[in-house]
Length: 195
Length: 195
DNA sequence: CGTCTATTTGAATGTACTCAAAAGCGGTGG
DNA sequence: CCACCGCTTTTGAGTACATTCAAATAGACG
View 1 (cartoon, protein in one colour):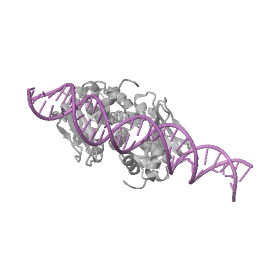
View 2 (cartoon, rainbow over the protein chains, first blue to last red):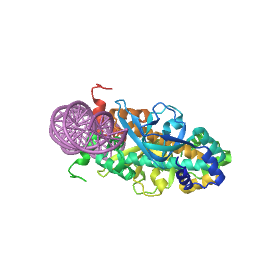
View 3 (spheres, rainbow over the protein chains, first blue to last red):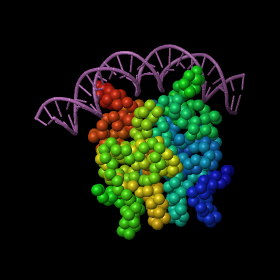
View 4 (cartoon, rainbow over the protein chains, first blue to last red):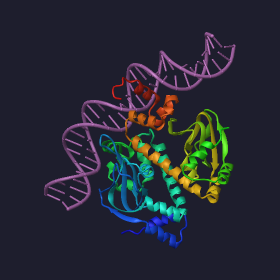
């Protein structure tokens, strides 16, 4: 199993921990493996934990009434993922999370996070910064997506996930930028008339 | 000028402050009035403060290369607003904020927030929760917007801002849900064939 | 190699846009 | 208090972007 080193590194960017604090934090983590195509979370679940990807690749998506999937976010190694609406309100969410590749994550339960905040208040700061970063990213995505043509949305995707667009099956990209796989295929194979 | 009572109320939902702490917090606030149509923030500005609306109505929007505005968020009384990407990275943002109606806000500068966190660490918690709430809202918006027809996006708008859709000029709603004003008009006046 | 999934291609359709012009509405000044 | 001006909304015709459905082709994996 992958070590949570990656997680400790990302924490140390924002707060400094003593070895003791680090160990206490590590004791709260629960490792988990998700096989390719396996569901981690589904619609109706109440999100009870924060999730950090150590290796592999997850996707979070909603399913509309016609059965079509819309990808909200990918999570490669080093990213957090989760339905924050459900986590925060403690109500059933409407998002699914599954693995595109075999993936290793660590989870921290809501309860553990409460304990963590009590014992090591510095972590309030870390999770604040985390949420603010994620918020900034969502604001960016909304602002760049609203009403822009698919070609431009594809461009933004490539910028945001430069390492993914090479290896990722095209249909996932289509789902992320909000077009059908057929249309994306046509778009990419068109005589490079306009960029 | 409106008193910041509304702000204190919203804080007290998440953390308890002594009178002394309250006063210290209040001493960091800077009130500001923005007249209808006046710009508060524009593309290229580096966001240096958190902004809370006491009364009135603000909008935050981006402008695409064709000059079209896309509204990211409305902020009626009791809401926070700001380009978090720019705030967080301290880089020029690409969002505008202006007033749809005469508006009163209070601002807290980044520096003051740092001082606040140092003096009253409880505020880390407050702003963490704030960011998480906002994040949940953005996740919801993305998930409900992606690839849904305009009719449904309009429905979601009405749910999110029930008080606004009555008084707000229609073209702003169009800009929020990502259609042209002409199209929204046609949509709303169509023989109520399909809800 | 065969099966399953992903991608490509094509034709017909639909949703939303553009451009243009008319109608409605609200405020302001004479 | 009415007339006018500017802004918003409506309406219509033509167009473009993206979808649907269907079928062929290509890849991946056991």
